[in-house]
Amino acid sequence: MRYKLTFVAGLALGYVIGTRAGRERYEQMRKSARQIAQNPAVRNTVESAAQSGRDIAGKAFAAVSDKVGDRVPDSVADRVRSLREKSQGGDDDWGTSNT
Image (cartoon, rainbow, N blue to C red; front, side, top):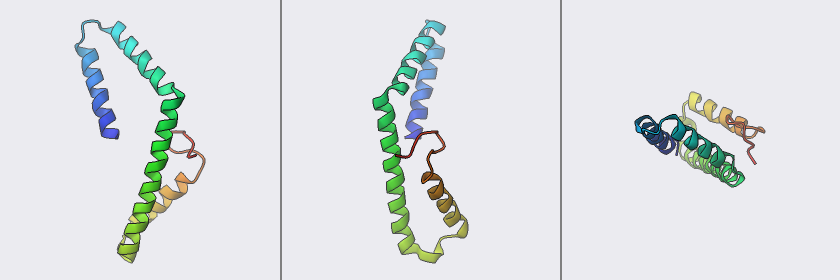
């Protein structure tokens, strides 16, 4: 998902740089993007998708760790534990709740 957003952002930037409308069009696009990002429905969908992703990643880790067992390097196991502890807190890296 992150790569798709980066691609779309690159397209938007290329459009803005290439357009003759210049700053006025850029401000219009920026205002529209801000309105979309602040829309409660969009924010809820993003949070739901993020939570679903965390849940699926946890299930995948459990399935893999059952099969791999002790062969997982300690550095990987420590990183996963720290991510789990962080996700069980109130806020994630983006400042959104994990509800």
